[in-house]
Structures are given as structure tokens and as C-alpha cells.
Image (cartoon, rainbow, N blue to C red; front, side):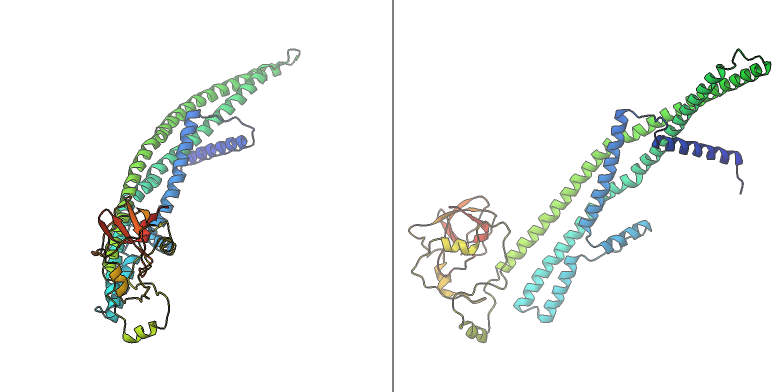
Length: 420
């Protein structure tokens, strides 16, 4: 190989000079050129942007893909510049298992029908999750990565160059200071009481040499000062571009929130549709006669339904407590209810056309969520409206009778906030 010895020696000398200057600064033996306050603020802002962008990026990746092995696999495919293979989401895998189970148990059985319905909803949820991950990756993760791998690398490179220029500048300042001190010392010699002419000649030559050294150091200082100022201006412009980066990341953040909102809205709508499907199938499960006979040995009320679904969270009053605190009509006998077996007495009592409110003790309730009536015995609800509610013996404790003007019907307790 062809080595340039002079360039190699020059680079080694520059590196040694910078190392000495950096070491002396750390030991407090050399002065350091300080940047102005605005420049320091730009540096701190850039470092903060880089650190928080890294943290947000990593945590968003964890949110979108909780499996660390899958994240490592995607990272390797990305570094190898290969397309990441399509991966089945957890919802889609659950849907597949439910469908296969329904086919095994019999798609015509009540359990098989329900498995198919729930499996189809899980498949739709999995597809919505896939779309959300894809949208978030393109609109949010990719811009963050581009900043860290593009703009920030450029800023870091220019900052390193600026650091080297500053070390060269401070080394030139130290060299000039030493040369001036040596020149002043040489100018103070010879001692005029000295009688030997040789000392006068040596002293004059030393003074001239140090004068040349001072001029050389001043010239190098001017050059290094110019290079430092030019590099500082380049770095300053890049650092001021962080404001544009914030604007771009703000836009990407809005797009991420919009994608997440659409995803959760889809999931909520899918679950509402599933709830209506399962709610409309109440009472369709018929138990065999042996199960009916065995159920007769139990006293009290056996509450539940195999296909009942729970309404949205944040119900303020437990169903059992709400039913216990509301007045009841004492003329209707309590008949035990069995899962999947209609209670004829309770059903006849809960016919809206025949229900009469108690003379006193009814309560007001505020509706928490919209509710669409599944049949004519139920009362449709609108969020934040006020209705009158009361309980009747024989009713499922998860339900109450609600009245709004001339309309009445069954309403779910978990959709209400009972008021005193």
C-alpha cells in the first residue's frame, strides 16, 4: 500500500495535540473556549430530543409488538433489507381455534354457534389490530427512525468536527501564549553587566527565533479561528433545525392518535355487535330433562346465562345492592330461575304493558351509556338521560324496570348510575 508519510505524521501530530489539550482541560491546566449561551441551549435541546425520541420509539415498538422475540426478528429483517413475513395476530389465531372447535363440536349446536360468532368477531379484531400496527409503523415509527438514523447522525458528526476545531483553537491559543512568554523572557536577556560578546549574539538570535515563532502561532490561530467559526455556524444551523423536527414529529403524533382512535372505535363497534348477537339468543338454550330434575334440588335463585354478556365498565352500583335497595311489589311469588330455562312468572311480570310501578320508593337513575333494546320488553337508553327505575321480584338482579314518560321496559343495571 502507498502510505503518505508526511500526512500520517501530520495527522499523528494533530491527534497528539488534541489529546494533550483535552487532558489538560480535564485536569484544569488549560483554558477552554466556551460557547455562547444560545448555542449551549441548542445543544441541550438537541440532546433532549434525541434521548426522548429513542425512548418513545422503543416503547411504541413494545406497545405494537409486546413479543420481544418478534421484535428482534423484525429488526434483523430490517437490517438485512428484507421484507418482514406476515404474522398472524393473536385475535386471528384465537378466531381460528374457535372456528375449528365449533366444527368439531357441531356448528349447529348452541355452543358451536356461539363459538362461530365470537370467532368471527375475534378475526375482525385481529384484522383491525394488523391495520393499526401497519398505520402506526408508517406514520409514526418510520419518521422517528429517520430522524435518529439520518438527521441526528449528521448533527453528531458535525458536533464532533466542531469539538476537534475547538481543541485545535485552544491548542493554538496555548502555543501562542507560550511563545509570547518565551519571547518576553528572551528580550530580557542579556544582562548588560555581562562582558562576553558571545552572550549578546546568542541572546539576539534567541529573541529573533521566538519572534518568528510568535508570528507563526498567530497565523495558525487566525486559521483555526476561521475554521472554528465556520464549523460553529454549520452546527448552529443544524441544531436550529430541531424546531422543524418537532413540528414534523407533532404531525406524526396526531396521525398516530388518529389511527389509535379508529382502531379502538372499530374494536368497540365489533364488540357491541357481538353483544347484540349474543343478547338476542337469550333463552334459546334448552336443558335436557335430567338437568331440569337435578336443578329442582336447589333452593333460591340460580342466576346466570351461558351467553349473557357484560356491558361496558364503570358501573357505579353493584347489581345485587341496587336490587336490594329498590322497592319491590310483594304480590308476585319468587320462582327459582335456571340457566337457559325461561321463568314464566317473571316473564309475565316483566311484560311492559302489564307492569305497574310501586306506589312509592322509585328511584331516579342517570344513563351512563347508549343501549339499544334487543326486543319489545326492553327500553332503549341514551347516555346522560334521566329515567325512573324500580325492581320486581323474580327479575334477574342485573336488570331493572325503567320508565321514561309513557315508555317502560327492562334496562340493564350496569348502564345506570342510581341516584339517591
